[in-house]
Image (cartoon, helix red, strand yellow):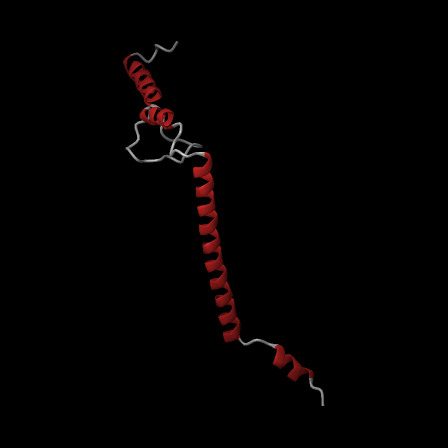
Length: 109
């Protein structure tokens, strides 16, 4: 005799099986994504060396720009939206302006 409840029970997945399959699938996706990311990075590095055989073809320019800032050597500032470092010449100009205001606050009029 046909019992729909038996049919339903045979097709359902228990909690343990569901968790095993879900975590197994997530682990497989994470591993595959990591491998894919590494392969893409390697391919981009190869393309970069093909079209730019030197580490920094314009390195002299960027060395000069870096010297204009007062950052610690090796520090890279990624904040360029709200506030951040400024070139040494801008910093010195602001400091001189503050000094002139401290000495004579009416000098701007």
